[in-house]
Length: 226
Image 1 (cartoon, rainbow, N blue to C red):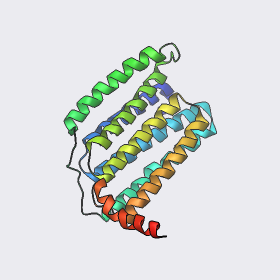
Image 2: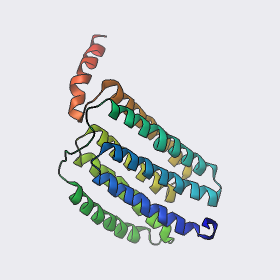
Image 3: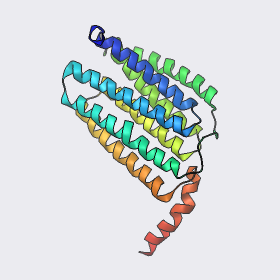
């Protein structure tokens, strides 16, 4: 049945689902559900890359799909859940500037705003509307991830915001940028995120970024003595 569905239609469905997961990340209060939503979002991004690979046959697209699948669907959510297991928190109920409902309203306005800008800027350069749609959703995801970073206080929620921004950058790159450049950026950002997660795991940050300072200060003093 799927072979009778054009690639454009499959990609449009995946793009809509990816945007829905970005909205759910803004809405989620349960950290466990937040991690699952992020894993689902990453899976959808991997499927977009895989769909392009099936159509174009570029091995770089397959590498991006496999790297996203391994790193973002399995490895990073597993590390996040391991950190959560060591903490005494299960929900993120603290907000700054924007609450979930207002965040969703702002995100809708952002999507329409980005669409208007890209339609006028890329209308002649990219006549294929699917590529414009992919670029719009990629940028919108990055902006929505930024909203998560600024509107939430829990460290783990902020990390998911960074990860969601990265998924948006990957999605934008799949439709616009050069493939080798996307792969290099993906590997680099994944390494940075893994180092950050391992740092959180090692120092046991309990909740917010402010908790990091009293734990990290003794280590900094130790390095100064050395």
